[in-house]
Image (cartoon, rainbow, N blue to C red):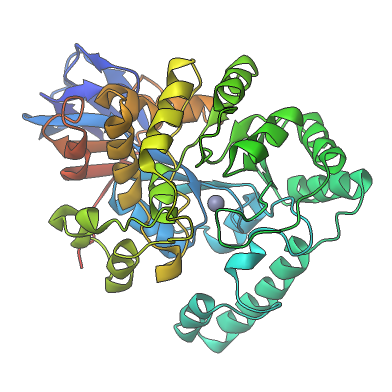
Length: 428
Ligand SMILES: [Zn+2]
């Protein structure tokens, strides 16, 4: 069966194009423009814009998170620490077809007691949000999850006391099917946890070098200019956050990031929450709240609020300095679980919010859309997606209006396709 989407404005991942027709067969786009075969099922998209499925370049996710993401036209989530490596996907997601695709870093390289331990209660204790999840499961599933949690905790707390141990840790992540390697450089100053331990440069450099030997790119969690410098010093490929501060040395750092061709996933939605802003405006939009559970709406309506002295103006200036210096900026959110202390974020919805904040900072809507599609696909070598071209996966999003002029039109979702399958929107 061939599906023809006709009369659409088409943003191909890089720009608006002349063609107004896309043909889908099986899992793929088989033609952009051209004649519609007589037997094709036609979808008239007059007044609408067709986009590549969106990519969130920074999440921590679950089956439910992936389902919400897809409902918002986010067809790929990139996990920056979590369980969905190749082996995790095979064990937990096989055969489930109403969820976004996912890639994962596996466990992050961090010292004992380092980030993100400060976000978790007690030592090895099961966090509340996990317990809540567990209540919904059968006893058998529950036991499996508890074993998995103990296993995760062991891994996160691995004693990385030498470069050799860092190398072994990276090798283990790759064996589990990690798609890239994540390194934590978090001293806690803007997360209300000052004095968090950070690994030595020598140990982190060994991890980066081993990842590169294994043909994996490396990303660093950094939230300050000082930590970002350490990441550049060890040869990192991407920053999974933008620095939230703006000291005098920022210009020098921006130049070093550009010179090293490092990409940056700012997660402005996270920094806004850290500064104390909730995402209430987003949460009050019926295009958003109609698709989210009550606990996710509640989460959007709260914030981290651990660095109220920060300023979004500084964040906008930082992101524009990088953008003007030619640094690839990717759309990411750092969304994880529905708890108010990790608030201001929701799977899928926050990707749209992030694009809005990039436009607020000074991006054109087209640049914001590139950052959620083609740029991300290129930097993560996801060569089958992120663009509307012949042969690409038919991961597509059709919206009312024209987000290349009004970025918030991305929320007016009419249809979503995942690998050529048309998905029905789930509404609460
Ligand atoms: Zn994260």
